[in-house]
Image (cartoon, rainbow, N blue to C red; front, side, top):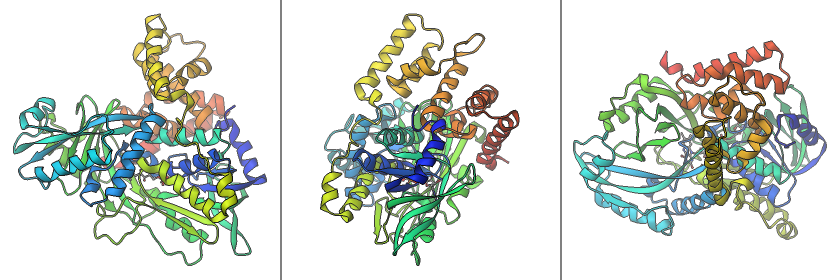
Length: 549
Ligand SMILES: Cc1cc2nc3c(=O)[nH]c(=O)nc-3n(C[C@H](O)[C@H](O)[C@H](O)COP(=O)(O)OP(=O)(O)OC[C@H]3O[C@@H](n4cnc5c(N)ncnc54)[C@H](O)[C@@H]3O)c2cc1C
């Protein structure tokens, strides 16, 4: 059984309260997952606690891009762009099933803020900073060439534009795969555990009092060093851990709207650069995402919500750029909002605030990692762990010097095996595999690489009579999510394991009954618990879309 199975959680909690760890990582977003993986792969004894579901915070609410960040060139953040472009290449190798190359077009307009000559220089710099190692280098386009490729685009005042490459990804699944890898290297991990207050000995923090948010039991967790990876909650945790904590964060809210792919059918992404801040239109899988906004946010990050004004603003930008698509509010399938864990750098505007990460080593034995981007998480995690080892001295620096974070996150999803999975799925369909139709089988292979064969072997229902391929696919995904990513609630599956909430018009609600019954069977829920879970899911969906009221 995997140590990230729902059935392993209790055992993990017992280990957390009885063993002594080298590192306790607080926060199960991409930063915490990255730190846990890096540290565990060096041989350190690592525990990780997450207050809610893994990736529940900002890490499931990003623009889902692995990118160098073309817009950071405007702020002369060349170092950040270089680092991000290097990590982008690494992620293609580490997670080909989660990170996919994507072409971006930047149309330029007479009335636009960005001037063609300046952007040309930016494009050249972007190629150079990638060391010319991109799926394709930038290209210039005339207005007619652009309109040929993007017929829905605004043609009035179009001057032409450029294309370049970056990537889209599955943000929540990147967290889960990173955590699986951390657990594979020995990290002891649990969701729904809140770190509450420090345990001190002679002025040093030697552990943390934690609370299991499911049973409400409290326990103490001993660790030689604590690493805070709580993103936008950094000041809140800082205040709990360190007396006289001085706030360092400047959180900012970002909203995205999701359209059905058919409604705004772009072959490639479009960068809407004429606005005050760049807004992207990103085709990915079965949806097109429009985002994002960037506004200061000082409330509890857990309370972030999409407001009517956010929707009006983003829809307005999309309507302006794609008049041919005739988009209206009723075309919006779903929306989501998140809080950027930015660190205050004295900038006057939200979008001017640097995306660089900050790592603070407090002498009491706590390291705070904040800021940064998804794209650079591996590098940021490495820097944080090396910083901790620095404090421990040369002997341990040598003992723990080798990390294994450049290896594929999932051994069955190396670039070669990921491609082989697609061939294998086609072959199986050709040879008459009927449990899943061709599209769904190839989708399973695309999402899981060669692990898709394990999923079929372990989780395919023995009796598929009268059931559609779609139903069977989600049941397989659900069983896998429970066994391998500690998926404990309906909401966690619909929102952070598969794109049911995000990409389906009914938010996957037609699947509520069969999927809740599978969860009830695996987790031993009573009928009341099952219905409570379905209600909680529906409530969460309504709350995410409350701007519609
Ligand atoms: C709108 C938006 C768009 C973005 N787009 C991109 C993009 O396209 N590409 C990119 O590279 N980056 C992007 N980013 C940035 C990126 O998403 C974040 O930098 C990253 O997700 C931060 O991850 P994190 O793990 O630090 O924080 P989080 O994901 O927020 O994780 C912190 C976790 O800590 C937990 N926690 C808090 N307190 C406690 C406690 N006391 N005990 C236990 N757990 C606790 C929370 O529940 C949370 O899950 C975007 C950000 C936003 C908001």
